[in-house]
Length: 340
Image (cartoon, rainbow, N blue to C red; front, side, top):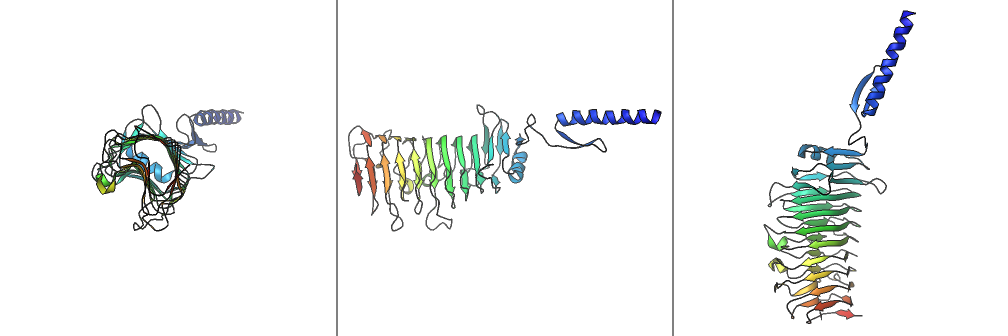
């Protein structure tokens, strides 16, 4: 009788301990009563990896799996961070700040080298973060269906965001990019889509979107550079500030389009007295047959120099212009531009 009561009492204690441990997010071996590892975090959300240090972030980027969210506490995370993990259409991977009003800062080691964040996997969401103090801010390499949103990229040695190496159907939106080209003014683009013909990367970087991004001031190259062999880039509802565009490495416009079938619509550009800017939008045929069939519609340009053109189509490039306006009056179109 005593033995039976003792056994029941022991089992009851096991069950109570297991219940407490379970509510705390620990897994419990019911045979031994041993808690063998925490499996919950951030208030019990199984899909969250919470970080407050650079080492945690570096590890999380390597170990994350589809559907997980890497959530960063306020603070500065110093390093050159990278992930090769693939998300999926139903379970994207997210990296974001715990507090969107006080975003975490990813800072590189030097303006002369490295990047803040490189992603080499599909289906990522990068949001509510700041990126600074690296040669490149955000780098997408063969990272398709990725969204970058609500970020600020600033104080960067070269380009702010580079969508490269076959990255397609990705989006940069609702963000701010300024103060780029700190070490090489001619390479300080805001968003750089694709790569040069000789760079060795997959140039089939197609159907990417740049939406509602404020560019500048002090972007020293073009705010947007759309490279040869890219198709269908969409740029809409963006704002371009001309202050700081340097003229280095032929950087003398808000946008240089060398790809084809791009759609550029509903954007606003301000020359801000910078006479380095000779055209708001330029097209160049760097590779034969490219720079064709690009459409510019409903863009508003405030060009303080009357001699600057709204669209300059060079070489054999072609463009269609629909309902673009400039103030004050001045040159509109140059080259093979069809006005509708």
